[in-house]
Amino acid sequence: MRYKNAVGIRGEELAAEYLQKNGYTVTARNMRVSHDEIDIIAEDEKYIVFVEVKARAQTSSNIRYGRPASAVDYSKKQKLIRAAEEYLRREKPGKSPRIDVIEVYFPPISERTPIDIAKLIPTKINHIRNAVQK
View 1 (cartoon, rainbow, N blue to C red):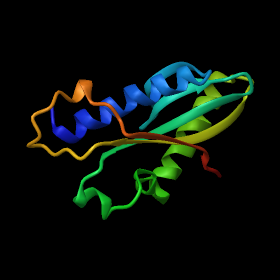
View 2: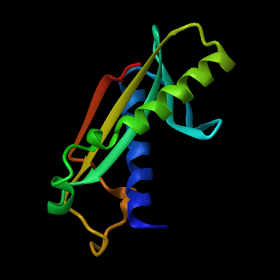
View 3: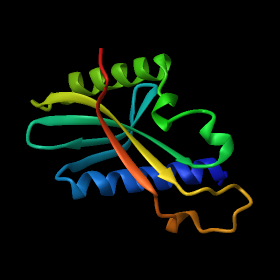
View 4: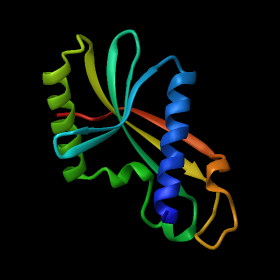
């Protein structure tokens, strides 16, 4: 598995744990909706939340790209909106929808860092509610 993919998978695991610790019920992960994918679908009392997870190690090369959430560009936002709308049409959950982004920051590491990514601990998790709106 590529290093970047492993960091992304670890970020999604940690984001799901974060949501559960904060009162959400995670109902799906890596849900395919037509040609798009939603990283996490979660619910609380009021909302069904579609979550895009962006994870990055804090290295000098990554810092120049800005915050992880900045990777959710116009095209990605349109895909998230399309996937959420399709899911809502199919499932009719009866809750207000919301699209969030969760940023997972890892300590400085690189592909050459001898570390078990499955045990990697984040330095910060940032939950951005209503990060994507129609």
